Amino acid sequence: MRSGTAIVVKHSGSHYLLSELPSWQPFPAVLKGRIRLQAGGATNPIAVGDRVEYVSELPDGQEIDMKNPASVVRVLDRKNYLIRKSTNLSRQSHVIAANIDRAYLVVSLYFPEVKLPFLDRLLVTCEVYGVPATVVLNKVDLYRADAGEYLSYIHGIYADAGYPVLETSVVTGEGIDRLREDCQGKVCLFSGESGVGKSSLIRAVDPALNPKVGAISTAHLQGRHTTSLYEMYPLTSGGYIIDTPGLRGFGLVDLEKDEIAKYFPEMLRVADDCRFVPCTHTHEPGCAVKQAVEEGRISPERYASYLGMLEEDGKFR
Ligand SMILES: Nc1nc2c(ncn2[C@@H]2O[C@H](COP(=O)(O)OP(=O)(O)OP(=O)(O)O)[C@@H](O)[C@H]2O)c(=O)[nH]1
Ligand SMILES: [Mg+2]
Ligand SMILES: [Zn+2]
Image (cartoon, rainbow, N blue to C red; front, top):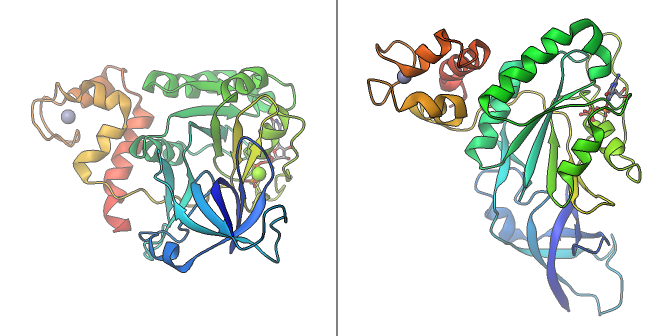
């Protein structure tokens, strides 16, 4: 009988791979029944990035394999995590990853086309769960020349909101050095819609890594959900990147209506000056948020996303 502490580095259906970082020697593990009960409503009790205690019946020196997987007996407290709620009424939720130093939310302006309300919902989720986020505008080779102004405009929206924004291209290599430096020594999560280039960026950041990349469907100009598993990769330069399947619908986490604005950093900064407390920043006179939108200090797109979330709020409960 032996035991230890390890990190979950891959999740595929019923089994997990664990590794005792910083050494990289993944071995299979399954969950004990007691842990399943502790999931608190999530479909997966443990996620990539979780720190767990495991036991194995095998004698020391014998390698843990698929025939004799280890058993996860305890999940250690999480620093943070990200959760995805399904958009139907099943109320199921899925933990995307845990103990994340930074989430890179990857979008491309075209192929697939960016949906700002979707990105904003992801950013709100990161704020709610205490995960620092960077916006990555990928595939700039495809549109810098023809849509340079639009690119700067979108860049400006998120920089003004207070987020780091990177412009990258896997084709020209633009921005990849900065992304690599940024990821160094951290546990990084790459998230976003299918086809935006998450797996491609991981290959570009570290050519030693080889996650599968898929072509964009020519009929729909969308991704094909090439990555189907949650998987952590060790960076040669130190640190880890978690690749994730492309997000489809993305339900907003449970938030009270008057809480949502707190997770828009640019609204939080001015909301203290609203005449009424609480203020929904919709119809109230003397609302500092509405004034900031009128004066161009808060982007109309971000404000529209906020109003959309207020309205949608009821639907997912
Ligand atoms: N022109 C251009 N194409 C890119 C860039 N990055 C990725 N692609 C292409 O976009 C397509 C999708 O890339 P993936 O890396 O598989 O995208 P993904 O986000 O991992 O997609 P899923 O795994 O389905 O969620 C591939 O055909 C890539 O070659 C880029 O910077 N420029
Ligand atoms: Mg992928
Ligand atoms: Zn207000």
